[in-house]
Structure formats: C-alpha cells, structure tokens
Length: 214
Image (cartoon, rainbow, N blue to C red; front, side, top):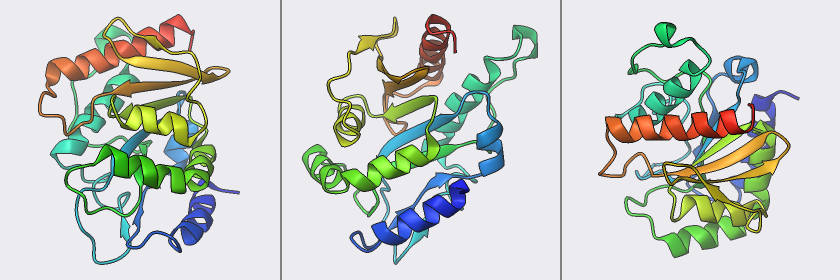
C-alpha cells in the first residue's frame, strides 16, 4: 500500500478524536522512497489556528516560511553529504521534495508549546503516532526540540529506555533498530538558531552516519 493511502486511512481515524486536524507527512512519496537515507523530522504542533482541516504538506513544506527554512537547510545539507566536497552546494531556499515531517499534536493553534500538555496529548494519541511513524520507517529521525519533542517522542513510540549517547556537538541520539537512528536537535523556531547551528546539526548527522556506516 502506498504511503499516501496509508496516511489517508490513518488520518481519517485520527480526525475523529482531534479537531481541528493538521495533516502532515511526506510531500513527494517518490522522492522519499528514492532517497538513499530516508529522513523524518518530528515536531511538536502547528502553531497557527485553523478553521478546519489543514495540510502542512501543501503549504509550509512546499513553500517554507522562516522556521521551515531552517529545516530545509538541514535537509539540504544532509543530502549534500553524499557528494564530494567540490560538488556540494550552498544552502538553498527551497524544501527538498523528499521532506517528511509530522507533528506529535495534530490540533494546532498553540503558539507557545506547554510541554506537559504536549506529553499528555502524545500519550493519548500514542497508537496513532506509532502508526504514522511506522508508515515512514525512516533511517534517520530528527526530533526538533531536545528538551521536549525528543523525550516525548521516545515515550510515544516506547523507546524511552534505549541507551543514549551524545554527539561531539552535544546532540542526544540513540539507535532504535538496525541501521536506524533518532537524534534530538533544537527546534527550528529557537531564537538562537544560526548558520553556525545549522552547520553543527549537519556535522552531528555526519558523525552519526560515519560512526554507524550509514
């Protein structure tokens, strides 16, 4: 079954318990499936209020705003790691079509995330979150929010007791299964995000990939 069909069926059930509902996931299934390294970004929640069902894939992920530009630059930088240094390109302002991103809380409308509330929602929606994560089965999962998203995601997918390490840049990560890894970074809306931090994230991913021969 295609990713798109699995998402559609899952969201149809999820929308029955979360309203309004912000859809997310894979923008271009072919680009995601063709990726040498399948990457999924996990975030907290959509910050704007919506009048009804809203699709993140058709809006921010195709035409990234400032916050999503940070994700686009990270994703682009990771994709460039497979190329020789003289073929690597500067950061682009467009999102790579292989982007896969989803929020733990699908309701949206909370400009300031309350970690306790997010944790409660994630626990209530635990089965849905696990099912969505399983659809993508990414090689690399990047949790945006070291002190909340990363930790809450672990509990939501039942991986809270997996042994964890830190990269030389201080970013936590762990192996979730054979050749599949989860890493925590700061949220792209973090005020301290800079070109230097983008480079640090890419270096951390490179370190994990090289250490584990990804």
